[in-house]
Length: 292
Image (tube, rainbow, N blue to C red; front, side, top):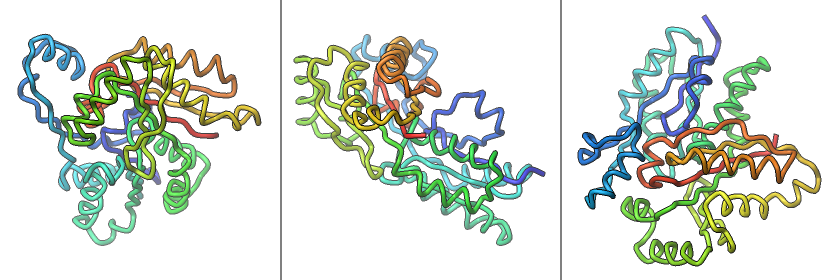
């Protein structure tokens, strides 16, 4: 039996090859949106575009994984592993972390102290970075206790940005007001891209990027502002890009980052999950980075 197994909720946006290689258990996120179920499209974002074409005013609702969802994954992983590291989306925007904590209490007493739950205080690529960090620490031979402690210390080092193509989806989720959404639209029309970030687990304004004709440029300019000192000192940077069914935009951002910052490496590109994607909307881009 292997020593340590990993569990992460679907919001971590890990590529399938990483999930399969490391036998990671994924706890699904629920999306309730009956209006798009029968619409054409290979993913939620394509269905959202179809919804817009038809002029249907409808917005999806996501719900956190249940206690049973986590309990099932704990039991599944305990068939293969002695101890478990569970990483969740930020507790400040979702009850997922609480579900993971509650599920732990339903395990047999001798197993409860073998589950270590870490709140990423992030999402998407930011959450994925914690999984990659955990894998690296496992490969170094660290114990589950040591890994959990180092992950907690690593959380503040992960940076996360997002730019929406249309803020109507995030407005509908209740995370920003109608006034803020209207201002964001007006600024985007003037070539000013509002960048949002997750800081201390909360979605918050990060900056306004002028002369940003598109989303990749807006994120690049924000990154450029934040890493001037690191670039000068030639620090190595790792990044993850996820997108709302805009692979071309994600690839363009990757090229901009790696050309503008030779010391930066994009680990992977992936499509955004439903829990982040439903409020972010089609063509949104997220960018997570940290020093390595």
